[in-house]
Length: 338
Image 1 (cartoon, rainbow, N blue to C red):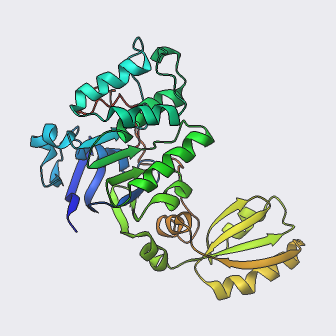
Image 2: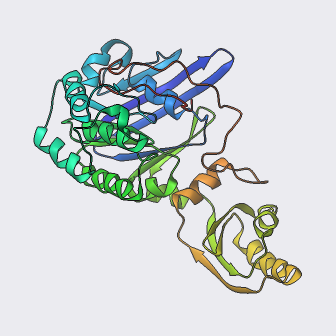
Image 3: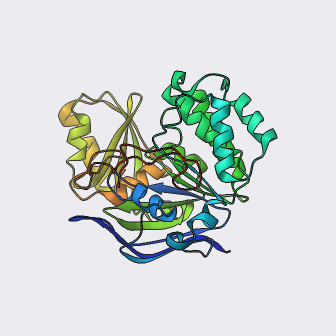
C-alpha cells in the first residue's frame, strides 16, 4: 500500500528545545492513524512540518511524495486541516466563513457541506463572533469533512464539542476509513481507540511505537485488571506505588490497573486488600485499550505519564497564523503542544 506520509529523521528545534528528535513516521493510504502523546511530545510540531508551516532542521518530510517545504501549495490542495484552537473571521457569518474556506481550498462539495451543516445543527446565518467555541470548531469540521481531499489532518477535533457533536465526528471518521487517509492527533485515547486502525505513540519528539492498533495491544507487554472492591480514596496511590503496577484509573466505582507482572499482582492485591480492609468482590482481566498501551509505553517503573498531563517539554506556542496561511483556510492556533 502506498504511503501518504513519509517522515525520516525529522529534527526541529526551538532555541535549546529539541521538539522533534530524529522522528520517523509512515502513514499508509486509507488508514486512520491515532497520533498520540503527552503534551509537549511533538504532535503539533510534526503536523506543522507536514503542512509546510515549519521547515525541518534535519531529515526529510514527504506528503504524497512531495516536500512540504517546496510544494506546500500542491500538497494543501489535497489536504484538509482542523487545528486544535480555531479562530475565524469574527464579522463573517458561518456561511461566509465556509465560502471563504472553500475558496482558499479551490474545491468544494456543496451538497455534502449542507448535509454536515444540518447534521451538526449549525446555524450558518449567524455571525462568527456570536458562535461558541464548539460552533467555531464545527465550522472547521464542516469545511474539512465536506472537502474532496485525500488526507484529513485533525488536531484535537472534538475538544470543544458537546457529546452529540463528538459522536457525530467519530461516526464520520469511521466512514472515511479505507477511502481517505486520516491523521488524528488526540489526547482522548478512548476516541482514538474507537476509530483508529493504526496508532503512533510519541514522547519527547520521538516515536515510541507505530503499528496497527491490534499489534500494538499485543506488543504492549502489559495487562489490564478490573478491580471491584470497597476501596478507600487512597487506593489509587497505594496501587500505583507497587512495582508491578504501571498505571491506575477509575471507571465508576471500579479500579482499572495496568500491570506488567500478572502473577505478582494476583499475589499482592489480596494481601493489600486484607491489610486495608478493601473487601475485594472481583478481579477481572480485560482486553487492553489504547490507554493501557499508552501508559505502558510512556511510563517507567514508578508510575505513568497521564494522557494530557504537562511535561517538561511544554513550551509557549508561537504567534498565531491568519486564516489561509497554510493554503487550507485553517484558522490560527493557540496553546499548542510542540
